[in-house]
Length: 316
Image (cartoon, rainbow, N blue to C red; front, side, top):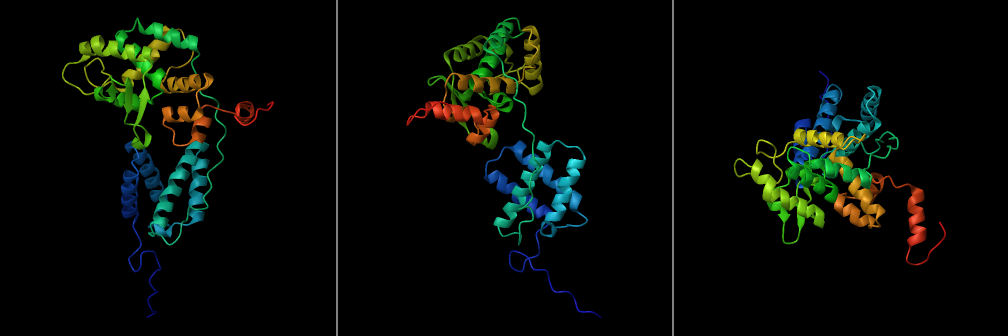
């Protein structure tokens, strides 16, 4: 009878290699500790579970995964004609997962360390509302079924640049009337930020709170914005309202919270607002994200630096 093979060498001393279930549970706890949003955690876990299922035959445990297997899996995603951006996001999640396991000494090596994301084509700039178009939409709000609600929503979206989920998650307690600011608590990564309310935005919100919201409220609800049934305004109701307002205003552009978010940022930029301030308003973690979001070209950045630098001024 041949001798038994020597036990496999793995991280963590003499303990058996980590199972996929254990690894995913530990990574879930890590993401929670990093204060990642629940939706972000869900997307990460969905990506990793698909990877686990695809590699189950050849890699029953994370320690069995190789770079070649990951590259073949990535190639398979591309052959399914998934968008390069989608595959790049999946690649980033896979890299983050294995890097976490490796740095915590749960794996003897990082198989994804040299896994490169696909090249993502430069996105066309997103739609932005011109000032005149914004005025058209605001005028259309006066004829809405709930004009005070519609006006307040538009003013907050355009005035603060909040994301869709952030807007819908706002509570009454998040509005500081003394400072005239709104505290956004449900941002990406759940990092709260305080956003000032311009006079027009605050007056529209105040009118809604004094006269519009009481008509909608059926019972005490903490939500700032309410739907027709007196509950927190839903994503579907918001989308329907914006669609109706866009049609009433005669716009060819599709109105979404993201259009208002980009319009807010672009308006701030065009009026000379510092890029770091715009980054803080939008809640971006890096200035690079803000630059890409605003579709700033290298030539635009060069011109601004050369003509506005305090040390010297040059001809761009």
